[in-house]
Length: 123
Image 1 (cartoon, rainbow, N blue to C red):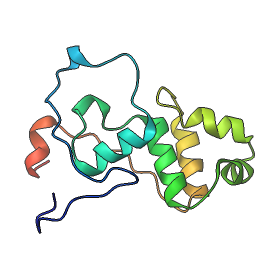
Image 2 (cartoon, rainbow, N blue to C red):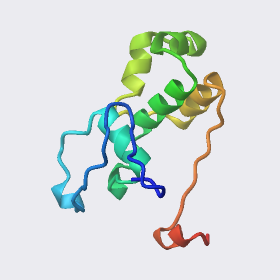
Image 3 (tube, one colour):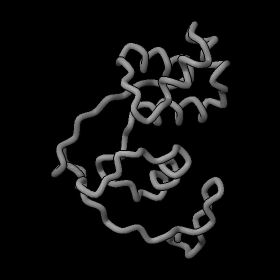
Image 4 (cartoon, helix red, strand yellow):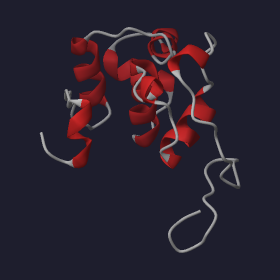
């Protein structure tokens, strides 16, 4: 629920469910599907080891730009299939591809390393 008591609604999920706190040992070898990952990310409920799979982050920026895979592929000079492959959970895109992707989506790539104790706001 939001701070005002409203129920969060995110693409097909109408109510926040309580999730158990999972350890890395309990993580399934099967990745989450994108919709589940996106919803849990919006709720701030992803385990720390699932926060930033590069392929899903690429898909987020493409969707935010309102582009289809084919449209983005055209802008990048690659096929729709290449875009789909880059958006997979287990994708391992290069920084150069991520920069080109960001520009094609009207965004800027920012990579940051943060120490776990820096969560309180100090870096």
